[in-house]
Image (cartoon, rainbow, N blue to C red):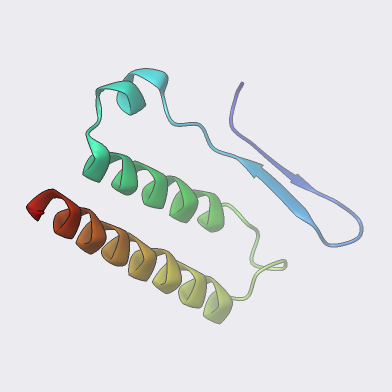
Length: 81
């Protein structure tokens, strides 16, 4: 399926940004966290400015990075035990 962005009249936005199968299968758990976070961030950046204000985009990207850090830290704790 190709990447796409669809804007609906009611204001909703649908985004599909693919991660290649080869990248996902060959990635370790930490790399999968990074792939997913990068995919979400890339998807958010595709939303037009008229639909998502710059300040809101920065907030969401910050939340994605925080989630990535927390998941990576949790993964490190799991592998240490």
